[in-house]
Structures are given as structure tokens and as C-alpha cells.
Image 1 (cartoon, one colour):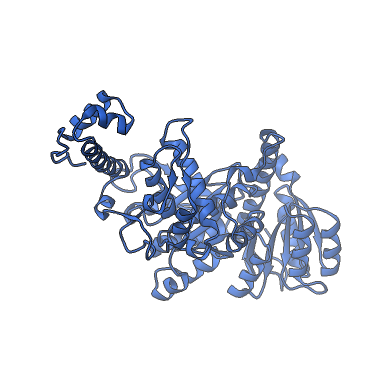
Image 2 (image 1 turned 90 degrees about the vertical axis):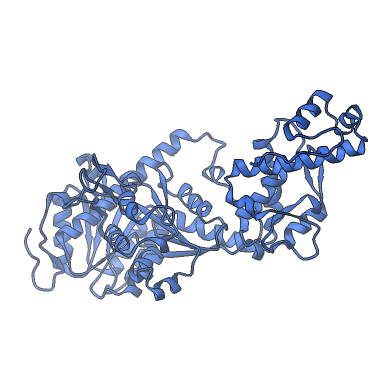
Length: 510
């Protein structure tokens, strides 16, 4: 294409085939309505000309005041906006656009790029940020991603209308339990950011529910009909992490017998949740930054761009990002790019109003999962709830759920749960003065099922020993005390090597 005249910001870029516009049906492109707002005539017309060549419907505007009136009265799919305009300010025009038409994607341009201005623009509701001068190729890629997002949003709304029953709402599919003011603030912020494509950076201690909030944002977004793809950066060996994220081509390394798409391509059109972002190796962080900038994905072992993706990013960490940047484990530019909207989830000990609600909910759900259908759910007494509220919960919501699951495994149907029935992991977390039992920390070396069998075996041995002693070795009386038949009692005694004198042999280890 022609160079713009002096003062323009659009330069001629190499139009390599792998970096062209995302493949969209010509009819779809023709239905995408783009507004270009810039007081530089040459740049405005260069952008409009390229867009029209690609088949988009284009409107141009050269004055901020005129643009302000236009966006308030007419909806556009994409608005390309200079940040510094004569007349109305670019941020003012952007806010008016998103207030009048929340579905519109706003792309901000500026000849004075800075981290601060880009962050402010993205926080104010911009879909993306385009620093001047930019090449035709860069412009094509960004507009292609935006048009792809518009198409996905339309498809999502059609699918949602066809799929949802009249009585069903999106909020029914991801429910967050709690009533504390701190949690309400988190949900209110999540609701606001969910309506945009802005990147979200979630912080909070381990077990506070960062992935739950990520799912909540995704399921309340216009991408909810597409996948939310979770990636725990700490759970995958460094040697495999890049391949897992970006994919690889055949022959890239030993064992790469065929091309494989990475999670970025799997998440195209949806959301990628990067958990424990601080554990992402620095070279991979640099490669991810390019995807954030232009959507280009290059698989491991490839010499070209293999895909252009449109992904919404939600990142999370239980560490202090500022400290990670200072230590050099997190790139500052990546942090700024992902931290458009920060959400901090307070620890459970700072929102104790939520503990009774969560405990009762976990008790109900886990009882249905583990026990016979129709059996009475145990009841938490006031004293038991007070014990739970007083606990410091270093493991937060995840730890509370584990404590309630252990309770469910050992409880009797319909029993009233007292503080004595609540078992904390023995790491000094039990509240001072509470009458609670402790789990042997060696159980943490076992998987869940093995640990459960070990706890059940210990309980059965202790219970049978005491009930037989109480019956003075009379098995019929012991069976009546235990409310089981004699055959069941004999089977349990044989299982654990317990004689009638209630002197058990050493039970098998689990």
C-alpha cells in the first residue's frame, strides 16, 4: 500500500501470508462496522482505505466533538480512536462509547506511548492499544483479532439465546458462596470486568479461590460459550511448559512425532487461565508477551507463525507480583500487560462471615457425594461453628473444605457435630483452647484414597475395641450396642484381627 504523506503514522509493512488478517467469511467482514477517529487526515484515510480493501464497512471522523455525538447515537462493532484529539478527549469518547454500547471494541492509538497511558486506556475500557507509528501488518493483525472477537461475540449471543431455558441464568452456572463485605467487593469487580475482554490479574493466598473467580469471570463474559483453559505454570516441568502452551511441530524434539497445537490455540476465542504465573520461565514470558501484543503463536521448532489467536487472559499468583518483579522472576512489561484489572481475594480469616455459609455448603455437598442417598446430613452446632470461625485457616477455603470432607467420612447420619468432631491438620492451626483432634501429618504423604482408608481403619479398630470392652466380650451385646448384626461385627473383627477380648492385633498398614 502507499505510504501516507508527511506526518502520517501508518508505514508499509511486509505482508507475509502467515501474518495476514484472520480468515473470516467475506460476508462476516462486510457486517463488521468500523469507526476510525483521528484528527490526522493521512493516517485516518490510510486506515480507512486498508479496511475497505479488506471488505469492512468503514466510517471516519476527524474531530473529537463530532465523534462524541456519533458514538452516542450509533452503534459500531469496532472503534479505532486516537487518544489525543482536538475537541473532546479520546478517553472521554471511549467512555461514552462503552457506556452507550458495551459490546463495542475500542482500540486506542497514540503517538505518545507509555506504560502509564496504555494501562490507563485499558483500565478505562479499551480492548487493545496501538502505539504510533505502526505498520500495515501490525494494523491488519490487530483489526483481524478484533473482527474475530466480534464474530465470536455474535455467535455466543446466538448460542446463549438458543440454549438457555427461560428460568436459567448465566450466574446459576458458577456460584460463589459468602456474604462478607470483602467477598461482595470481589464479586462486584468481577462482574464489571467480565463484560469486557480486559486481562485480569488475580492475587491471593493459596486456597482462597482464585480459579473459582476466574471461572466466574469467564462464565459471565461474552466468551462463555467457548473454553476456559487452565494452565498451572508450577505443575508442568519447565522443559515441557513451552510446548504445552505454544504447541510444537513434528521433529521439534525427541518424541515430537507429529504437530501438536498448544493451549493458546485450544483457548482461541475463549479464556486462558494462567495459574501461578510467577513460575513461568522468563524465556516463555517473553514469548507470551508477543502473543499478547499481536496474537501470533509460533510453535516450538517452527520458523514461522503457525496461528493467530484471540484469547482473553486471566492470570493468578499467591505471591507478591511487585516482589517477583524486583527479584527478576516476573517481567515488568508482562505484568503490566496482564494486570489491566487487578483483583485481590482476601484470606478466609479476614472474611469470617463466610465461614458458616461455606462450612454448611461443603457439608451438604460432600455428604451427598460420599454417603448413602437420603441419609440425614449432620448438623453443625453453634459451638462447632464458633470453633470453625476461630481457626486461622492458613489453607483458606481449600483447607475448610478438606476439614469438612474428613468430618463427612467419620460422621454418623443426622448427628450433631460438636467441636470434638472437628479435626484440623496438626500444624498449629487449631484455635487456642478448642477441643479438637489432630490428623497425623504423615497422612499428607498419602494420596486421598489411601489416607481415607488409613483413617477409617484407625477409627474402626478404636470403635470396635471400645464397644467389645463395654459389652465385656459378649459379641451379641456388642452388636446391639453398635446397632449392627453379629455377622457384620464378626467381619469387621476379622478384618482388623480383633479378638473377643478386644485385644487387637496390629492392623495392616494403608
